[in-house]
Length: 170
Ligand code: S3P
Image 1 (tube, rainbow, N blue to C red):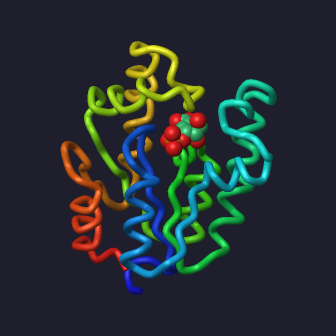
Image 2: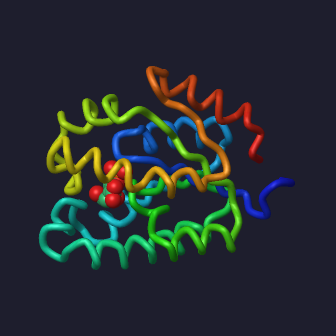
Image 3: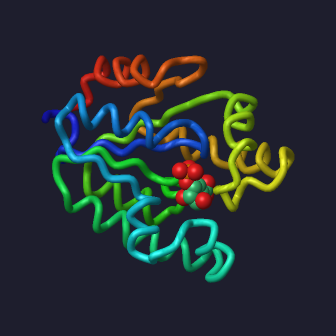
């Protein structure tokens, strides 16, 4: 691997963009392990993300999210799907920059993301269309700091994976 000192691919982007779906397929193609940060947090806490937010609050969630990121990044090679807010937290961004690995922003227009998220009830930060849009706008500058941007708009997950593989990030 030339560009990045670690065989790690971090998938990032807003909630509903398909980080998990695409991560599973990408890891299969690469024959690498796949780690979903939210799922490891849930397994570690024995409950779901919504409950963690409700009972312990977002600051606690961000603490365990950071710890989960450090733990997950010890597996190499690996495809790691971050949560929608992981890359936005300065210490997580700094850690990934220093530790190495490729960061790929999965991008998608707001309307499509909203349509995907409003049919589910598992995202504590999806409250209403206005705050969803505000959060999206706030986060764009952080997502833009990823090494690569891949659009998922109107695309099948398999096609997104092909586009990622074409980037030759590894
Ligand atoms: C969050 C997104 C969620 C999850 C948590 C916080 C966020 O992950 O980590 O609810 O801050 O945007 P997904 O992006 O996988 O939904």
